[in-house]
Each structure stands twice: as structure tokens, then as C-alpha cells.
Amino acid sequence: MQVEKNVDIVTIAGTRPEIIKLSELVQLLGGQGHALLYTGQHYSDNMKNIFFDELQIKPDYDLRCDTSDVNRLKEKMLELLHQIKPPYVLVYGDTNSTLAGALAAKEVGSTLVHIEAGLRCFDLNVPEERARIQIDSKSDYLFPPTELAKTFLKYEQIEDNVFVTGNLVVDVCRRLSRIAEEHGRRDLPSDYLLLTMHRQENVDEPARLEMLMKHLAGITHKIVFPIHPRTKNSLAKYGISLPANVIAIEPAGYLEFLYLLKHCQLVVTDSGGVQEEAIVLKRPCITLRHVSERWETLLLKANVLFPLYRRDPLSEVVETMLAAKIDRNPYGENVAATMLALIKEIAV
Ligand code: UD1
Ligand code: UDP
Image 1 (tube, rainbow, N blue to C red):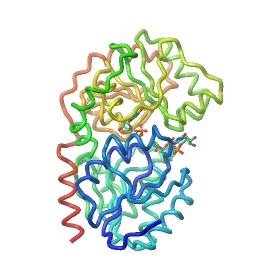
Image 2: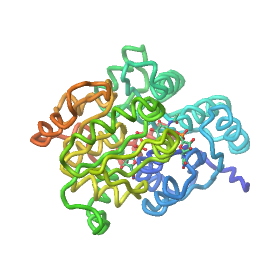
Image 3: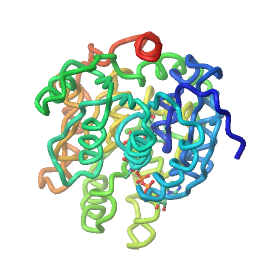
Image 4: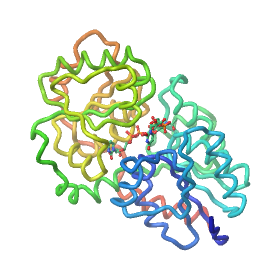
């Protein structure tokens, strides 16, 4: 791999949500002195390339790791970072690529900036929660999206170099919202609920999946379900089939997904990013978990929790939430520009 030595800032991404959320900032950071390193944790075309194409960024280094193993991701990143020796490394969120990138950055002596710092669901069984805590504790600069996330950092005695920035997802939604209108599909119904589910605690256990199917079958609306590969694998492995009202589709590109989200009656999800996008686009949200780190959406009543083991029907919660009025976005505006200004101040 050809290595460019004059790189001041390396931004690390490895999965679908990182490509999406980092896209605006990466565009603003531009080519000079900045490089985007993609780990390849997500590797399928419909989890990777479609997002680079639609969001119009491309990785300067693609490690093609094809794994979510933290040690392997870290080793591969170290090989490259040792050569580049970037003074600054930016990581986003809480995936294994984020954690491995943070660990590798500190090992080569880079200053580490964590974007989307301070999110907490206070459940250590959630692997992303453990990653978030480790990454925040190692970061030199922290960009929590909201004041609440900043407060959670304070509870862990992290108070220096903390800057509330808003959430980059807002910029991406706003920029692509109009273009997304051209990406509707004729083969899908005009009235539908949108469903996404991929978290390991929900989809790796057949009992949870069976509970989901029971809840979905009780809903009278049609449900469009772009299926994450992890979920698709589990459904096949356990021989679980979807109820008749559920329309399964392949993982959608970002423009198609934005269209589906903008026009759905309501979204049911266990995704972090989708909870955020739902409130930005004013769509009611039901989160299939017993906790969420997106407290702001719950406090504003744009989102409610529905752990799958609840015995009352999901269909009743759907009918209540269809009437939700959503009038506030807690995640700021023009976030990438705010972040760019901060990064310029830090990296002088
Ligand atoms: C990962 C993140 C999760 C994030 C999610 C976003 C970790 C531990 N988890 O979960 O926090 O919310 O990404 O989508 O980092 N697979 C494919 N093609 C791909 C990627 C994955 O087929 O491009 C399949 C593989 O069978 C793989 C499985 O999905 O083993 C799980 O992928 P993995 O990256 O381990 O975790 P995610 O569930 O995607
Ligand atoms: N998304 C997408 N196509 C899909 C499902 C989701 O483009 O079929 C987008 C969604 O708009 C959001 C991001 O992927 O921006 C969320 O990714 P995911 O749910 O995989 O991860 P999480 O946010 O939970 O980490």
C-alpha cells in the first residue's frame, strides 16, 4: 500500500453508520493533510461501496480486514499508522473498528479525538457501551453531541477538552433529504411501518427473534424491513420465517433508506443512528430495547422503548405512537462546520 507521509489527521471508519455520519466532515476536511482510513469491518457492497458512492467520499486507505475482531483490526491499523505517524486521529462512535482505531492511535502516540463521545445506556452487557467507556477514557479531545452526553462524561471525571458539537447525522439528513425523494420504490406500499433490527442481543438468540415475529404478526400495517446481514444470517440459521405483513428487502442504500424513513408512518428499530434520524426527520420511533443511549429522543417523547420480552402487544404501542407530535431536534444544525472549526483550533 502506497503511504502518504504528510498526513496530519487520519479519520477512521469501518462500518455503514461511520461512513454515513462521517461523510460531511470528511468532505470538509478535504484531501490535503487528511486521510480517511477504512478498516473493512463492513465489506459487502450493500454495506460499504453503495455508501461511499452515494455520499461521495472515498477511503485513502482501505485495509479490507473483513472482520470485527478488535485485535486483528488494531494490528492491521498499527501497520499503517506506524508508517504515517499522524499527529491526530479522529474516531466516531462505538464499533469494534472505533475501539481498535482508538487503541492503535494511542499506541503510535497520536492525539485522539472521539466524535459522539459520552453516549451511555448504562448497561455493560451491551458491547458498544463497553467500547464507548474505553474510548472516552483514552481520548484527548471529546465531542459529545449534546449537553446530556457531556454530563455523562462528567460523571466519569472526564471534564477537560470536552466540546458539545451536535450530531453529524443532522447534516447528512439535511443535505440528502431532497435527493432522496428520487429514490422511492414503486414495488413497495405507500403506507407502511419501517423496521430495522441488527443488535446482537436481539438477533443472535432464536427466542428473541421468535418474540419479534409474534409481535410483528399482531400488527395490522404493512412493514418494510431492510434486513441487516447479521439478522438475515440468524433467520436462516434458526429457520425462522417472517409473517405475511412483513416485506423483506436487501439492506438499502442511504438515499433509498432516507426515502423510506421520510415517508414511513413510524419506524421500529434497534439502531442507534435510525433513532437519531427519526427525530430529525420528525418520524415517530419505537426502539426494540430496554435501554437506549439516545435519551434525548425519549425525553422529547419522539421515541419509546419496547423490549421484545414485553408481554403486551407491540401493535398497541404502534397505534399510540402514530399520534406522536415531534417538533424538536436535539442534535443541533451545521454540525460538520462546528466540528471543522474545533479541529482546526486543536490541530494548529
Ligand atoms: C456492527 C457494530 C455495531 C453497529 C453495526 C452497524 C461491533 C461490535 N458492532 O455490528 O455496533 O451498530 O455494525 O451496522 O462493532 N456481515 C456481512 N457483510 C458485511 C458486514 C457484516 O455479511 O458487510 C455479516 C457477517 O456475517 C458478520 C455479521 O454480519 O459476521 C456481523 O457483522 P459485525 O461487523 O461483526 O457486526 P454488526 O452486527 O454489523
Ligand atoms: N441505513 C441504511 N440502510 C439500511 C439501514 C440503515 O442506509 O438498510 C442507515 C441509517 O439511515 C443510519 C445507519 O444506516 O444512518 C444506521 O446504521 P446501523 O443501523 O447499521 O447501525 P447503528 O446506527 O445502530 O450503529
